[in-house]
Length: 126
Image 1 (cartoon, rainbow, N blue to C red):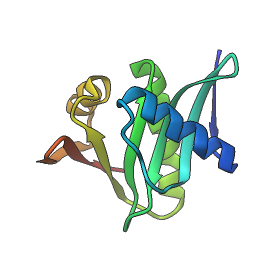
Image 2: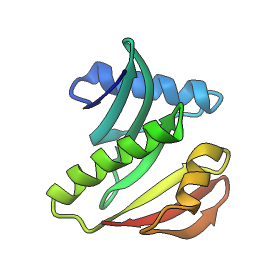
Image 3: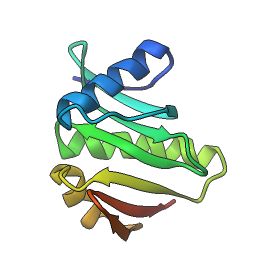
Image 4: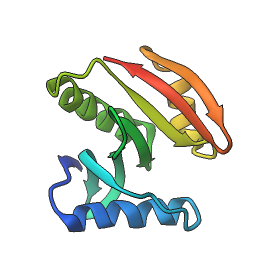
């Protein structure tokens, strides 16, 4: 069973950074902030979706072991962002993140925005 929750401690954010480094060959993510959604199974992190500290909300750190986990995390993130009065957010992913790219390319209310080097940018309307 997968448990979904919001990050609440510095240790939660450290685990997200470590997971990101594992997936993307040591690439670092800087400041991540609320809201950050974590997916855990049997005590192990199987995914996270986090905001960068930039104007508005930009999902820059996305990692999940399946599309199902990814969709659930995005649904939770959408609810939190909407409760904060936002009508859209920007999704920023590494172009090598094939699972997330495939999902975003086929998801309603998501528009491809631009490619910038090794990153892809999408806009998600709420």
